[in-house]
Amino acid sequence: MNTAATLAPGYSLGRLLRYMLRLGTFGFGGPVALAGYMRRDLVERLGWISEADYKEGLALAQLAPGPMAAQLAIYLGYVHYRILGATLVGFAFVLPSFLMVVALGWAYAHFGGLPWMQAVFYGVGAAVVGIIAMSAYKLSGKTVGRDKLLWVIFLTLAVVTFVTESEIAWLFIAAGLVGWLWRAPPKWLRRGNMNALAAAGLPSAGGLLFHLNVPLLVQIGAFFAKAGAFVFGSGLAIVPFLYGGVVSEHHWLNDKQFVDAVAVAMITPGPVVITVGFIGYLVAGLPGACVAALGTFLPCYLFTVLPAPYFKKYGGLPGVKAFVGGITAAAVGAITGSVLVIAKRSIVDLPTAAIAVATVLLLWRFKKLQEPVIVAAAALIGLVAYPIVHG
Image (tube, rainbow, N blue to C red; front, side, top):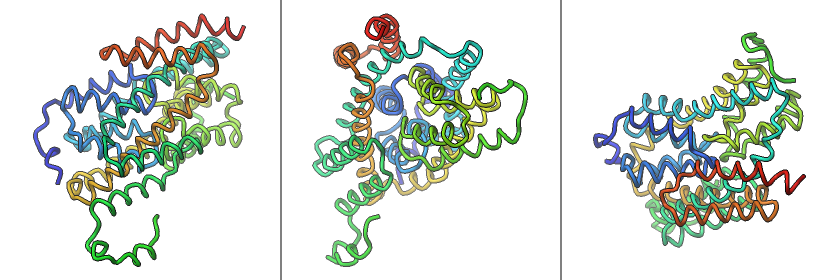
């Protein structure tokens, strides 16, 4: 058993909830950066969560479908405060950004779009690349270290993620199996029975605010629940699935509205997947936003709290540790690959490249510099520079 989890916590649930509310309010950069902030603050700075518990949470978040950062936060709430902690932490982490995107959805629906959004995203998108690059660098150093096997897994997943521009779920399981079979092989394998291993194989928008269109809400709930339950990967991994359903299949939004919805998710703090709240609002008002968010995040909550007791119970076993180590290295490798994918889309010219490089240098030089300050500055630069560059 993981003894760290059985010790009395050095913090109250209220303090953890206040931290998650603050992270959900000011945590820019998407899932990669958010996972890095949680490790920096809860593991290193405050010491509330052990390194082993963090790695278990990261591994579980990568194994299960749904938004990675939200699942990691829910798991960390579970570590010492079980179901109550997981539930309240999930709400605290998602609520601030949900309220922000609903407010932006209201403005978008009532004022005919947000023309300033493209200019803001021009600067913020480049700064976000720098932020998540630093987060990926810190995560890789702490979780992979000098372990050669983990570096092989890390680099493999980084390359695959960059080339395919997607996170392939079975590769995470394969990475865990490689770690387990290499580090803590079962007795039958240690006896040299390789034949058994070879035979087994590796695995139109803006409905009225208080008018409840029940059939439409059921349709929204079913679609977004499917998105939350079956889409693997973090952050923007859900975007192609959403596009296929929201634009191509159901015709709830047009192309421009959908692109604006993704931009809203990128310029607001918290999980990128919160764009579902914006989409839901445009389709069916506030009820649509609530149903879309609930449909997306409920599966990820269940996929986290249901297996969590078994992670806690058996997390100390050598085979499980090796399995989790392999998945963790794969997760960080995929995160690094996603940095390159996002950079390819956000670094489009010399000014955006300069913003990304300046962000990395500032975070490297000034360790206590808060990311929201950089994001705000990048937004202002975007508002000034975009009309000049693309005017």
